[in-house]
Every structure is written in C-alpha cells, then in structure tokens.
Image 1 (spheres, rainbow, N blue to C red):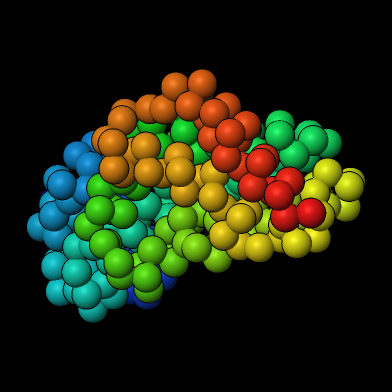
Image 2 (cartoon, rainbow, N blue to C red):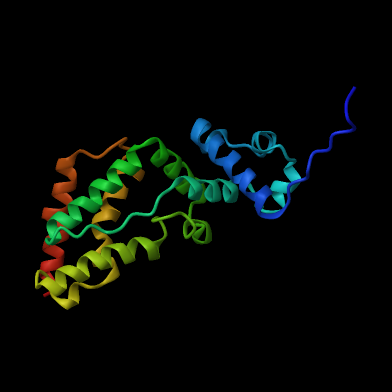
Length: 197
C-alpha cells in the first residue's frame, strides 16, 4: 500500500531553463538544427512548449542558446610570430567548422542569415568577438615590430578568417586543406598587413 500520493515538484526559473537548454543541446547534437523541434525539446526536458516559448520566441533563438551550451571559448594563440599565430587561428577555425559541432554552427549561421542580434550570441562568431581575437594577435605583432600600427584595422585583422569562412559558405567545402590556409596567410593576409606599415 503506498504511503500517500506522490507529487512531482514543478521546476521553475533557472532550473527549468537549464533543463530546456540541456534538452535542446542534446537534440542539436543528435539531430542537428534541421532536426531540432520544440515538441522534441519539450518532451526531452519534461515540460511543455509554452514553457519554451516564454523563454525563446522561436526555434532559431533556442538553437543559438543551446549551441552556446556546447561551444567553448578559446584564447588567441601567442607563438611569438604573426604568421604562426594566424595559421593557428585558421587551423582552429577549420577544425571547428569541419567538426560535427561546426556543422551545427553552419546550419545556425545559414538560418540566422543577417540576424545580427542572434549572430552576436554565437560564441566566437559575432563580429566583435572574432575581430577582438584577431586584433589581439595583430596587436602583439605590432608590439614585436612585425607590423606597423596602421595594420590594426578590423577589416585587415579579420580578412584571413573571412576568406576561410568563404570556403565553407560559398564553396561548400567540408574542410579546407591546409595548403589553402597557408595560401590565405602567405598570399593575402601577411602582404596586406605589411603593406600598411
């Protein structure tokens, strides 16, 4: 004979939000953005769709928030040479964009289109975050005397990663060969930086 009726504690606030984000991250990992649905997330989180919609207005906003749960922040490299730092940043970006997590990121970037408010929430993908990392690397090169102060311009700093992103977005490559990364750095990035002395 049971001791009495069992009641399930209703989750609220941060606890419920964490459960929804965990469920959405699990769905993204298993099914990608294309397979992310509010119904599946609600079922997995043990809640209803209204609880999700009160926090995120649509599937894309939820997908971006869930991706943030999966992504990690990286520090800019400091090898002591601009060429090696730039190559390392490109290699990291290439590995990430080529990975399963990178596939999710590419789906989110495509779905977001020009929605800057959503793009700004993607770790390392907002213009400000990406620019800051490349300006840090370039700033160290200026301090070492490898580049002139005039090179510290956001468009100059980020041209290499923009060209790499173009390989994925425009050309649709699953990964960029290392010789493409070397070519971007040696034939475009470094000559541009040096020309601004």
